[in-house]
Image 1 (cartoon, rainbow, N blue to C red):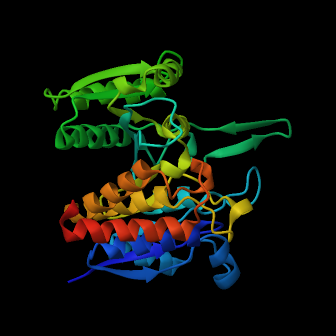
Image 2 (spheres, helix red, strand yellow):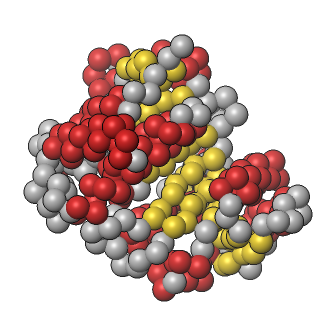
Length: 340
């Protein structure tokens, strides 16, 4: 039986990069049946709602989705649809791998780390209000339950992937109750994994260490806000957001999406880099238990970058989104023929 997967094209460059990723995933022969649903600006125009109930229901029923980026206005307008999806579906683990690829404009070589970002609370819980007319207040929520399950997800991943070290990032020296609870819970969970080294870094120091020697880190686990910020920092280390895939995983569902935004300035121009979405698709395949197909996609991306001939403008080339997709499809056909 095929796996039924919800596909949310998204806004801006979203439809272009998800179309490219869909072509690449289908080229592997993975048994996937797509169910296309809307969210964001496209849904607002067509349905009058940013996050239609049938989109949520589709993800709940299928339990897995591939999603393009969705636009969120800065400072005004609607709340982030990404945050709403994570909270509605309790997608507590935001998993973002970062690695150095050949011919990418990376600041460091040999980077291979994964960020586990707690996805449902912290300042992103969205509990804020005005205090009179001259001040605004936002409430930071950290719970033992959420801290324990993101730490456990990070340690389980490390054990499964043969990684020897998990590092927690925090600001417990200043926020002694909230970040203090996160850090204490991290070490409580760490005792369940004596085969994996556990340590921690104050988040500002961790940012500096990542810029100077990112090769020393394997798995990072962080509260929501720090994880979001350091994800972009790590993307910058390895060549930009065009190479940064991601997953939002919960007990009942998982959504796979690139870390980058909707880039409306280049939407419709066939210039967007689809590799982050393609690599998010590889994560989706692995999540479904289709490890061979996932490895095929990852190998095809590596081959494309290693050759360095078919690259989008953000990577120094002139290729279009669909040219990249077609090249990946061609490489997958080679791999299927025994070249893997």
